[in-house]
Each structure stands twice: as structure tokens, then as C-alpha cells.
Amino acid sequence: MTDIEKLLAIEEIKQLKARYFRCIDTKNWDGFKSVFAPDARFDISDDVPGCILVGREKIEQAVSVPLAECVSVHHGHCPEIEITSGTMASGTWAMEDMLRWEADSGYPNRSLHGYGHYVETYEKIDGQWHIKSMKLQRLRVDVAAPA
Image (cartoon, rainbow, N blue to C red; front, side, top):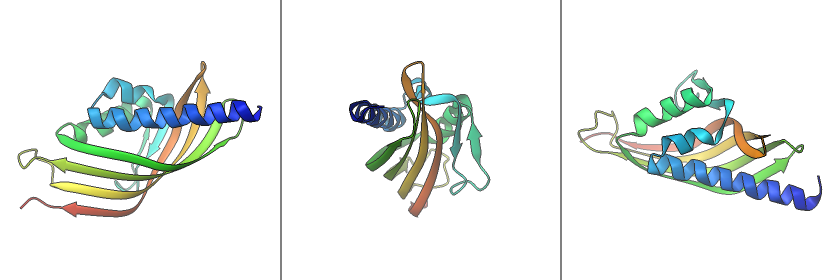
């Protein structure tokens, strides 16, 4: 790949990740699901011990249920993206999320404020970049329980 092709691929991956964050926060679950490769892996074992989700449908289900009654704000910062071939890439994103549930939601917490990193791989399928694998590595989580 030329340097220009690599820069274009990096920008496309940044746009992909922006869609990921926007779709979570707007609860656009079809859009959220579409950012993943069909056989994507999402490792959230730091939050839920042993939990590694495989397949875009399972990822969408596992994320949409706890966030359905939640106002969320997800931010990604400082991407480090490496294009490893014409169809593969890897990246690390600093992240911060703020989740708030209403008192009657039934969720065990009132709020969660997390900080950490997403460590990811990407695959270009039929001309479009998709998240192939993702691991959420939290550095800190501040939780407020219901009063």
C-alpha cells in the first residue's frame, strides 16, 4: 500500500469507530451491529469475568440489553492505528464512558464512569472496514449504587 492508501485506510477506521460510539449512545442497534465483522470477537472479561462474545448478533444483544434503559456517553481518543495489510489493521483507542440508569430501571447501579482502552483489530470486507476483534481494558471504574 502507498502512504496515501494507508492514510485513507486509517481515516476510514476512525470513521468506523466514530459510528460505533454514536450508534451505542443513540441506541441504533442495527448500525452498531454493522460495524462488526460477522465473526467478530468482543472480549469484556475485565468487566464480566470469562465473557468473550463471538459474532455480531451476540455482541449486539449483550450490549443493547443493559444499555436499553441507560443514557450513555462514549468517547474514544488518541487512536494508534497500524495498517498491517491491504485488508487488516490493528489499533488502540483511549476511552471514557459515562452510563446513567434511572432509579426504576432495575439495573444494580445508578451510574458507571469508566476509563481505559480498546485494543482492536480490523478487517476490510467487500471494500468496507469492520471491527474484527475488540478487548475493553479498563484502568478505572467509578460506580454509584442506588440511594
